[in-house]
Amino acid sequence: MELTKHLSLLALALVAVLALYGPTTDACVCELAHPQKHYCNADYVVQLRVLRKSETLQKFQTVYKVQIKRIYKATPEARRMLRDGRLSSPSSDSMCAIKLELGKIYIIAGRLPQLNLCSYYKEYINMTISERRGFSGAYGTACNCTINTCYKQHCPWQRESADSCSWSMHDKCKRDYSSCVLHKRQTPVGEVQYCRWRRTLLYKQCLAHP
Image (cartoon, rainbow, N blue to C red; front, side):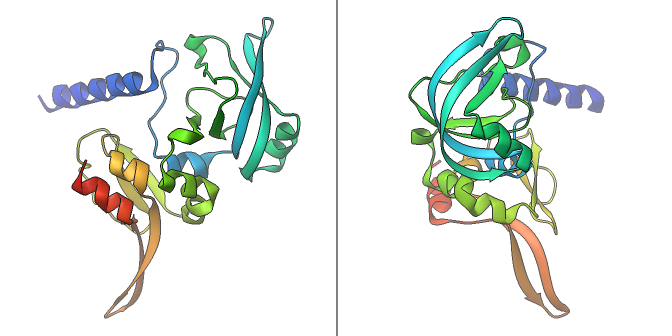
């Protein structure tokens, strides 16, 4: 009985992932992650404008010519790739293709060698102020705190720990307006450090009016 219940929850989580990422096939399934986790795990984080795109039939890729407006984070290898002003993505939906619109500005947190649906990409105009601040540097100061994703309405494990926070994929307030950061607290036995969700004004307003 317990195993059946567990499998049912996993099936519902998979359906939710597919719904949130749009049409896809069995060959393309991505784990949902908080924007901060995308930032910390990325090889590069950039703000860019899409100039044009072309198809390469031999490699089944779409190549986007982009104008890099800002580089928030990049490994040496990623910086060399970004200098070329081209980003590639699989051209087939079954291979996790992404669709970027010409002329629009995006924030992208990607991994080498190419973009796919498991990368973070969002049109800049649609980002919250908290997300913009996070990708411009705030997330980078908190990468020593990890974020664990759970697929229930409320995460069953402890919300705060020495090195991590839990995040439910249903929690839009934490996704859009908060980050998992290191806090210090004085106790009778000395100073204790732990990770917890930052309670910004916008986060509190979101909780009050979800």
